[in-house]
Length: 86
Image 1 (tube, helix red, strand yellow):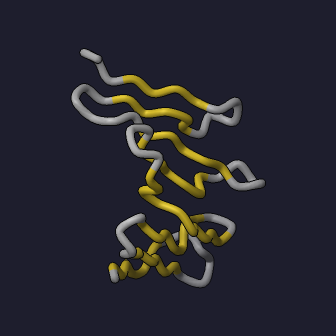
Image 2 (cartoon, helix red, strand yellow):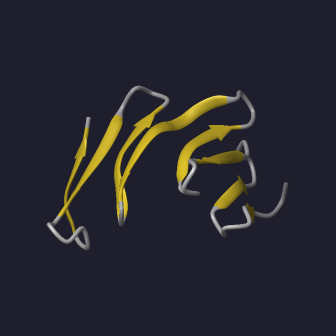
Image 3 (tube, one colour):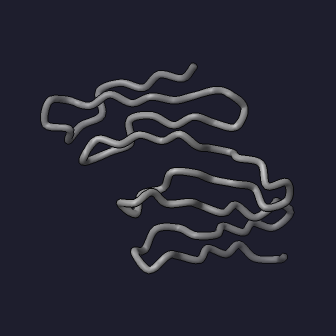
């Protein structure tokens, strides 16, 4: 592949991301149409899974490596207050 490409689900969420020299990444959606998983097509290994959301944003994501990121928001859930990687 010589060019980057991105296809979308009907709700405009990303479906497949293709980059030159890299395996394609396929996105999974939860029942609300939000990203809940990312898989590298070359090995079908989960790159990200176990996501959690507040009404306005992502609060946690677990990576295939075992690492995770979490995000905190203010009381209105409009501004991210903190980020933790672990």
